[in-house]
Image (cartoon, rainbow, N blue to C red; front, side, top):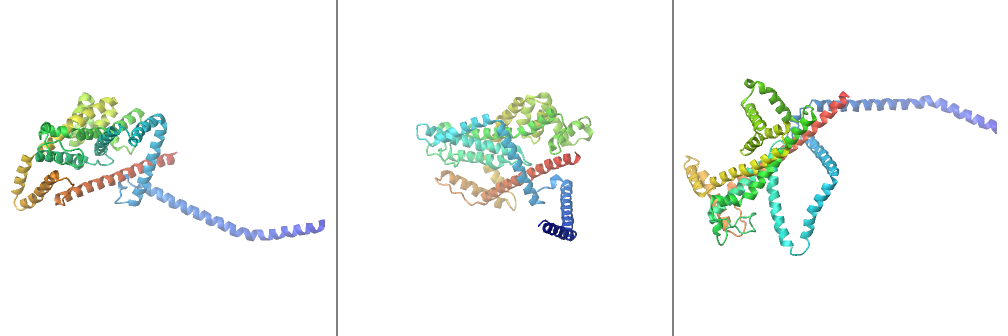
Length: 422
């Protein structure tokens, strides 16, 4: 039995020895083929990385690279969401207190009791204030371009109140439906006659909340510049405003090489730096497209937060908004509108054609003030304004997508540079 088993084992080993060279050939060929495929994939990936590294960040826009831009935009949203959740976890106690404060009134709204009318009134007022506060933030916070919510929302609202005041003879509009819809009151209140002060007082909440929102929207440049100064490192490539500010400070000694815009920016920077609170107040109290530079200057020179925000809030919510509301109310009083329409009608050729739709629009607005239902006309002026609002909102959304996609690319490109250098 031992002899037989030895013979079988030797036969098996001989057969396997004879097969092994033939069977190893296809395996070696398969390995070579896999290596070729891996090398090809690595080369294609390296080509994609080289192509993305040489791409200009400003070329990542939705009309040039729609798929890439949307991909980077979605990834940026994921990154921001993760960062936001991590920060919330760091402040668990404050988040819990905020949830309790917000959820308690909401729960009480579904419980019958004498508190219900007060809560419903408070809910309508708070939601109204938050609406205008959010529009103010959108107007100044940027994302590549600000949504000009004064021209689109607050200005038309003040105009509607002004026209209604002169048409109705008073401002005690029935609530509800005011402020969603303006209807002339059945009986006029002598305390609410159509005067300049009463109209400004009627829209004070909307105007002040919108102004406070614009002040909140100016905080990101301040915090960005402050963090960069405290870190002691040069600004990153994606912080273009900070880089531009530091280049402006370098050019300060050579005035002859500076353009008019750079000289204006330098004037704002000096005013804020030397005068302090009142310099910030002066810049915030007038329509100033260079106010972002004031926020960067305050952050760069470590001006205290409440000095910067207090002056900005007072200037934008009180002084600047009073000037803007006064301008709109004066511009849309009946006497001035009638004189403007007469001037438009005297334009040769197109005067009558321009005068007719504007007059019809104003008549429709006056008819709506005396109607109990919302009968919005299909006037060409209304259609053009709705189209203008829609185009502005779409432009803002597209610029937001482009800006967030570019931010993701810049950050990703920076990390890949660090990894390659290491």
